[in-house]
Length: 73
Image (cartoon, rainbow, N blue to C red; front, side, top):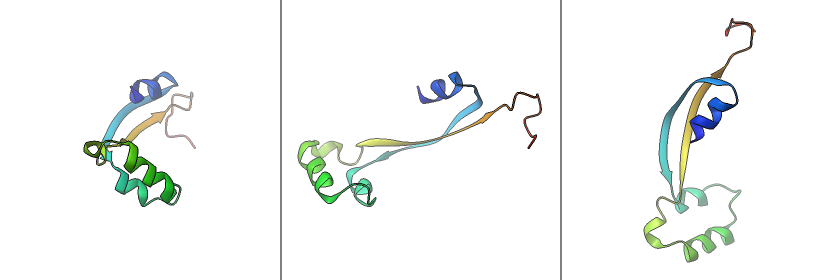
């Protein structure tokens, strides 16, 4: 779905190069997620989902510069 949306806005050669689960423990290591929020997630998210709460996706693509020369500065 993400690759289709990226292609729809004019990017070419769209490819997903990495996709992996991201759990609560990983989120807790980022300062943007306050300890109170992480504690809340641990309470409300079922334990079997703690290791795969969200997905991290890396997508590579290129956007044509419109001149036919994709390498022009």
